[in-house]
Length: 277
Image 1 (cartoon, one colour):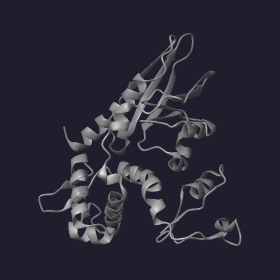
Image 2 (cartoon, helix red, strand yellow):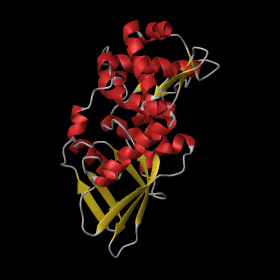
Image 3 (cartoon, rainbow, N blue to C red):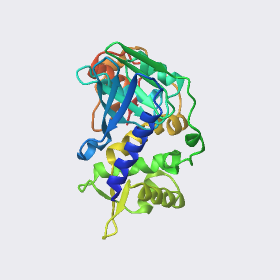
Image 4 (tube, helix red, strand yellow):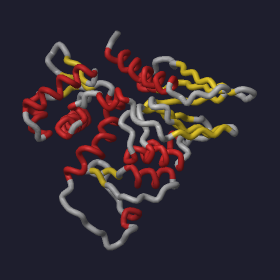
């Protein structure tokens, strides 16, 4: 089994665990099916709820890791698609995040047995189950700690700036760019190789794999673990609506999730204005 197949199996394992943890109800059964392996879409699954005397409920489901409030905004448009019922599957949803998801009409299940289902007259909402013991005891990954997040950012940026998007530079170069020690960079690179995010070529280069999943996990962990450490100061603009008229050069600046969601979907007023450079 190659690294890509192992990644697909990991995602499906999380989905199966969440399905098995779904609240026990006599008249409801839940099943999950693997789709065909279609490249970046390997994280999508088909989930079916069968209820007595009702038509089955079918969902297109997707596994998301490291879910927290700051990560919800970027997922809202896709999971609120009324034409194709979508289901969010994750390892754990805290009560606060569960409430945010419910308010946003984003249906979900997690491996602790928490769930929100609202479809064809069926209403299920569970948010009090605690985080599974296995998650509490799980070893913290170094690649999603502050030093690892800096290293991953350097990798992601490097694949954008180079002519050959898959070739990565030398360890010393990434240590300098990311601002971490060579020892830390070596440890993080080793874990990325073990997890299948990097592979070493026969010419001594490193290729970045599972880029989409890595970027999603990085974005989620960045908001919790690295961004608070980067605060330089607080500033107040003269006009609270300045972001509506601001024009950013996309080559150097990008809007954060809340502003981007408002500009794209027109359904949320951003509480926090974020600009990435």
